[in-house]
Every structure is written in C-alpha cells, then in structure tokens.
Amino acid sequence: MGLVGNCADLFPRARKRGVVPDLLTDQTSAHDPDRRHVPQGLDVATATELRQRNPGEYRRRALDSIAAHVRGMLDLQNLAR
Image (cartoon, rainbow, N blue to C red; front, side, top):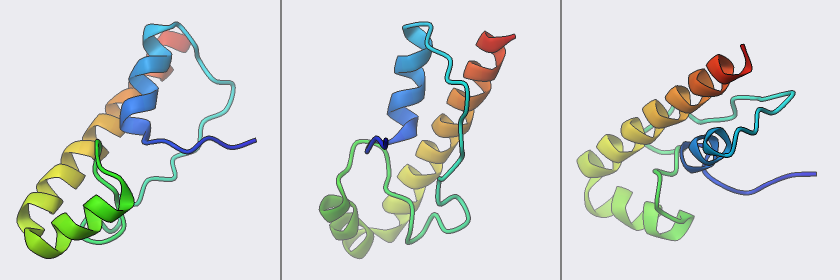
C-alpha cells in the first residue's frame, strides 16, 4: 500500500491525531533540493514551472519543506517514546 503526499504536510497531521507509524522511511530528495524535491504546497507541474522561473525561490521553498519533513519525523519519534 502506498500513499502519495508530501511528508512535510502528512507527518504533522499524523502527530496531531496521535498516529505513530510502526515504520517510517525517509524518501525525501534532500540530496538534490534544486531539482528533485517538490516543495510543500506545490504539485509537480507547478514546482517545475517555479524551478524554471525562479530557481532561488524554488530552492528556498524546497529547503523549508525538507526542514518541515525532518521536524515531522523527529516529532513522531518523540511521540512514540
């Protein structure tokens, strides 16, 4: 079973509901924030357009999303303790 979504959005929702997954993988494209990471709040087409039109804004939004993703993982880890 799979779920399509941005973990920067999904992890805080799970925490708010008290849902702690038994298993969590980090599949973010943090290794390539300039091309591979889709920033929070954007679909692929919109992200592609933003990356072409304003690479600096795209990178800023991608890094913000990556940070939110990591904070979400840490929050879930803390909730599980």
